[in-house]
Amino acid sequence: MPTVNAYAAPSATQDLVPTAIQRRDVGPHDVLIEIKYAGICHSDIHTVRGDWGPQSYPLAPGHEIAGIVTEVGAEVTRHKVGDRVGVGCMVNSCGECANCLKGEEQYCLAGNTGTYGAVDRDGTITQGGYSTHVVVTEDFVVRIPDALELDVAAPLLCAGITTYAPLRHWGAGPGKKVAVVGLGGLGHMAVKIAHAMGAEVTVLSQSLKKMEDGLRLGADYYYATSDPRTFETLAGSFDLIINTVSASIDISAYLQLLSLDGTLVNVGAPAEPLPVNAFALITGRRSFAGSMIGGIRETQEMLDFCAEHGLGSEIEVIPASKINEAYERVLASDVRYRFVIDTSTL
Image 1 (cartoon, one colour):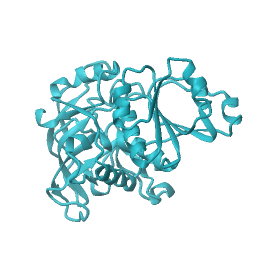
Image 2 (tube, rainbow, N blue to C red):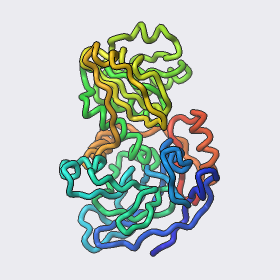
Image 3 (cartoon, one colour):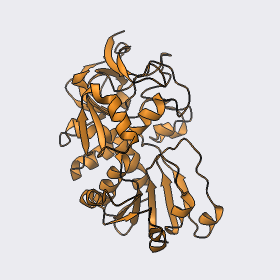
């Protein structure tokens, strides 16, 4: 079993540090990937700090992985050595339940296997992309089109698909009015993708400090939610609202911004519950929904869509030595819009 270099959290309260982690040997259906870049997702911070439950340590996070195939198992047919590939938030599923058979592996009824912090098929705990190499079964590896640079492609494996999936599922496109709550790692991709799909896009952010960015990224309108007049002005305006923030907001107030039969989809994952006033739903036949990432087939579709439309994440590339500093900056909303680790610095 090979040992590789990584950055991992020794506990929920300690900084990430250089750590040697184990990878399994390449099996007949496995792909060995030399990781070139790994994005930093807010979920990484929540997970390693125990916000979503206890973890096994040391834990190397990272589920926005872009790299090059360096070895394939004897029975691999989908990938070959030298391919540009990516790995997202999951590395396996049961493959047999109704949802897996529909290509919705993210909703595997037995639970998908997360890229880090999950029990792998050999009983070990999965370790993520803050490392030099990863071994993944071929079915959970996607192709990164040549039109996308690996560094800007890495965050698409989470931030891209997390926003593409609900936009596609709820029919964002010409004639649809879409609002994006929050202009961060997820939100900036939601704006880019919704605009490319042909929807009219409005950003709803706490303040107007990122307004210039929002309009540059493809938003048609930009409003500050700290201004109470925003909720009066925009009442009943939107067919679809994508809430990307991982903090508690007044969901009932945002539901009032939906038109008849509109849907508010939560993709941010705050640790605390989000109470909803029933009247905010029933007075407009509105829906409050949630969405995870997409399945592997849809993730490939998203990458191809982004390549076709020239969409990559807005990134700040950092060396591994700045991971802990980057975590603090993410928590302070001081990043535009995704940190990406250059794994050659590991």
